[in-house]
Length: 441
Ligand SMILES: Cc1ncc(COP(=O)(O)O)c(C=O)c1O
Image 1 (spheres, rainbow, N blue to C red):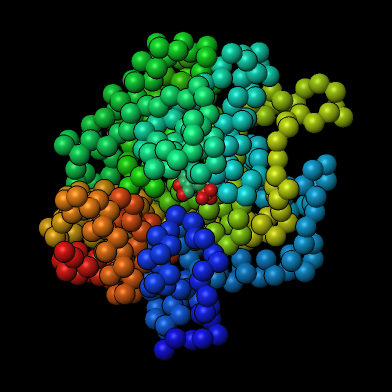
Image 2 (image 1 turned 180 degrees about the vertical axis):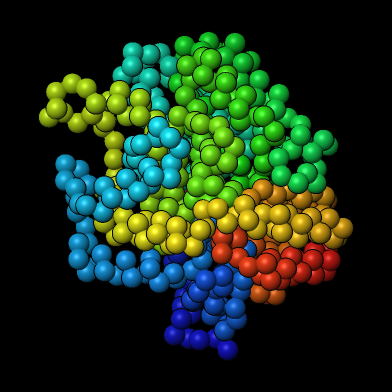
């Protein structure tokens, strides 16, 4: 039964982001509540969350410690100016974050989203090259199929065509590495694929075209999510690191989805044992509850800015809500929840079970590839001829009707459940998907 107190009677005004607006408004899917692993729908059903919201609610939903922290902070100090003023919780959160960040990355710049973290990281990279006397390094290198949010810096280094083609010429001086998706060689790989490390060598080709003295930074997602989950080939990230080091190019890992335990370590950098110079995060930082992002930088980068007269601003960048008190309180409570429940390691403990369960779908209808790492999974479907994305979208709608939230990008089903998912819930997720796939046209 539809609850008329929670369902609006006019859906027209809200232009929804990254949504098929007309389809949605004809057949709305409304969440009105959430607890732990489940959403509650407006028509009174429970939906198992296979996506941690949008890769952000790593501790599950409406966790008491986080809720209480936000309530208390809102009543105590709602807002403090972010420029030239401070409040204790932003400093406490930054310090707590550096307890779990890779060694030597002891400085944090706060933003409000993944997109802002990416643009902040690109600006830090450019400005750093300049303050250390290498102002000719202005080029930025991204990767085909990369997703780095939706701001102009992010879509310029990003490599997903529909996110770029409507928006003019974007930033100049950007080049792209090839993506690492090699289905002929790597399909149905469990974990990291064998083939493709050599694709990192394309950076040498780009250096040969432009000269290293013109390149400021390379940005990649250690595991690409939005493009359909691409897991780095064995050795690929280290090779990229080595080439960057050789040529004085900064390496940025965009960890907006891999940060905060998704792979079984606080960050992908630790999981893969490859240290970038800058890490971008958001999402899991506050368990998705309040918008917040954070950019981690190596100490040398931070320290390079701390020169000149002390009354002068060192870096002309920041947001009204950088380190917002309520977001900071949410971040602190989120980190406590992760720590108390061992969630930053949990993807390692349950990873094998997750992998086996996902790969049991190999023989389901339409499946052409399955990929997994940590608590991430992808099931790629054969597209309907002439109608790309339609099959996966139908599966998304059917799964929702059957009580499971999945996410689709192109014809790939991407899965990233909260890190609290139980083995029984993994079984339920996979069983529901099997039914959905086998019944799909
Ligand atoms: C790797 C990556 N970077 C950046 C972003 C953008 O984050 P936001 O939507 O918070 O701006 C995302 C979002 O999914 C992401 O996956």
